[in-house]
Image: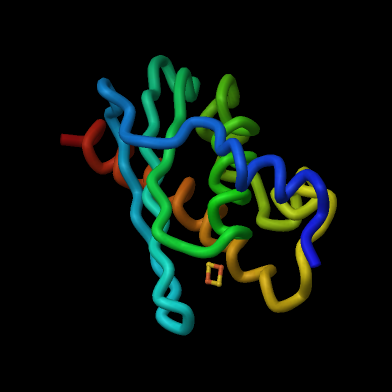
Length: 123
Ligand code: FES
């Protein structure tokens, strides 16, 4: 059912846990399955220097969080805002149709964290 890439990220997730010095956090959930994803970002000069996650969810949600946090490291916040769930799915060599919403959580969590950062920066 899952690609090798998904299984790899699920078995050995990258960037798991809370960043010590994060300055942005975004949490999203899916009401259907009840899964929750939280992303922590360390942003400096509009660049995502570091990213991590805590996900209470299925295998696809954990793999999506893992690969998405890898992908956005080093991106500007504008680049990260353009990251789509399809990019996450592609990086995982595909997800079963019923698991596409798990990758949407990753896209939404990144957007929420950046929103959180911008709110803080405006204060
Ligand atoms: Fe809901 Fe995967 S089943 S995030």
